Amino acid sequence: MKKTVVYKRDERFEIKADFYGLNHDNAPVAVYIHGGGLVWGTRKEISEEMIELYTEQGIALFSIDYRLAPATKLPDILEDIQDALHWLETEGPKHSIDPRRIAVVGSSAGGFLALSTGTFTSKPRAIVSFYGYGDINGKWATTPSSFYCKKDIVPKDVAKTLVSDQIITDASIEQRFLLYVYARQHGEWIEQITGVNPESNKVALTKYCPIHNITKDYPPTLLLHGTKDTDVPYEQSVFMRAAILKESVEAKLITIPNGEHVFDKDFHNPVVQNALKQVIDFLHTHLAE
Image (cartoon, rainbow, N blue to C red):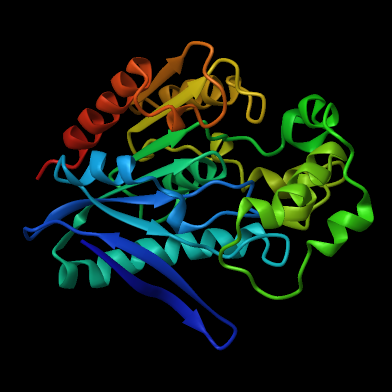
């Protein structure tokens, strides 16, 4: 049963989440964070198959929006994710949620935000990152992308028309994808989402890189990544797993051979189904009472 709530608001905006609850009290919950390069995306992107995957296995879902770049920069986006977790901790019991059993699941940029929750003061019980990334200081992110440079070059004036001063909390891929392509083609993506020039201020970006901020109380983490991902390099999950293990924290990487970005859209592929079963098993283990 879906219920839409506003988890954060002020005079300039309100941010919504869709609650997919269960029929019993004290249910564990997975916060789902959509992808979109932090410049597009919506809580509504999660597929019906994915909703059923979690809820039929006894895990409620909380699919959230958050403010989008470039009008909103990364520190405020991270604050939205913190506020979503805080809302669940305080309001969750009113919706039959056990606030002690929260996991965070994210895809791509949402995977990056999910990995970032492991550095928060109030952490989730577990993290699942689908083709996310832990290092926004790396060359893969801060220099022109060879993959996107093979596409038609997006003119700067076209990209400019897609930028708004207004706070945006959800946007379709059709509305904003060319802005992302432009930013990746010109090596401007990280500056657009953070307001920090990575060439002149790498140190300022380090605090936003989960891979450089892992401690021994980082949550158990499951990473999933395809070896043929042309958007986020597979190595991002390899390196993230190694950094977590270095702190003696549980971390597992599920490799999807020849898997591309958003491999999970091929939901009924046996390899994907096996990976998703491992996701559910991981969540059951770490969200147990």
